[in-house]
Length: 337
Image 1 (tube, helix red, strand yellow):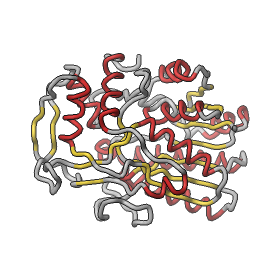
Image 2 (cartoon, helix red, strand yellow):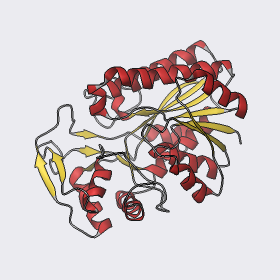
Image 3 (spheres, one colour):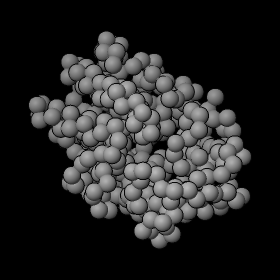
Image 4 (cartoon, helix red, strand yellow):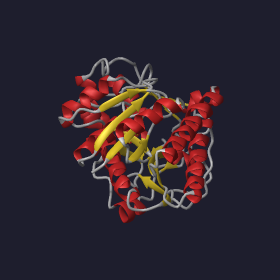
């Protein structure tokens, strides 16, 4: 089936993608600098799949180390998740984000070219749709961003386009995903943020488990059914399977392709909280505060292209996403240690 290098493979989405790849018959090699993840994820992947994953602790900007990984393993394709991802932090530390996310990708692409590896699946984001496009977001809409993190995704997509133009053998699929939540249904793998979570569902989980006392809802006066922000939440294993489908497509087609991975429907913050209350069997205290700068009312995908090109669509609903998240939270009260 081929040997796949997964960059950032101990992170939330990367680790679930490793499970999907192994289940599909691929051999997986992981490189991660562990700046925002734990090596324990690899043991969990092995427990779930019964297969050992070869792991290298390295930074993508260390080209010599990355080159050696390619030489030692004869890599057929790359699934690229590695990158810093906190929007607020990117505003405070823009240079760190540009150097890490863009610099790491450029180094990786240089090594791939030298080692004649021509297929990359890139972890992009719906953030590239900016705040001017109407929903649902379609892949041919113009891209922009509202923060440095978003601009790293916009720029990397452009770099991949340019590399594909310069080399007709090259294939790059940029997967623009929406709001991944949930966990592997075994409860062994899930979202394991360091410190206080930036994302809604891990934050709700910590309130549900008593670590935090309430969920802040930033604005309830949006033009949405209940006034709270609407987002397209997707189960992380659906997302992982979308990457595996994109890999099969990328290995057969050259050129640059952008594809949304979402459910195609939005859920409000209050709907997510209600679904989580059902999953955990307790009330989640909330506090309404003012809107955050840069937040938009609604964001959800037009998911038709993924179905047409990749033969993929999301199957899990919000209730399963929340139930799986809660199972992981209960089984891992201190995260993946």
